Length: 144
Image (cartoon, rainbow, N blue to C red; front, side, top):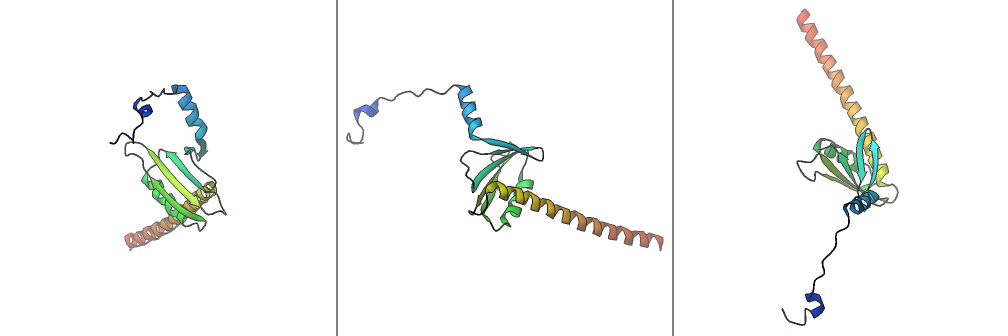
């Protein structure tokens, strides 16, 4: 490269001193907000704002991630929702929510959980009714 690109001051690199491990952990804990929802640990990842936040769920995978993403995207106040599994060997699921100005990301997450629970209740009721109807027709056939 031409000599004009590099000055002589840049030729002498300075070594960087790492922060003590205790300091790194303290900074990391200050940046992450933790709260529990239904006994599960949920971490609000750093860089979140009122209308855009990333959440990390411990012990969850695609089953909850895709269903929750679907329920949250049904909310018209939500601009974007997506999830990812950072690594297949870790039982963590990251969920990103971006909302319009009229609601917060945490409110959208809570509404998504409520909507998903309501959906599960409807599926359970319909399944139970169909199973009971099937069992009663099978019992009638056995008697006849």
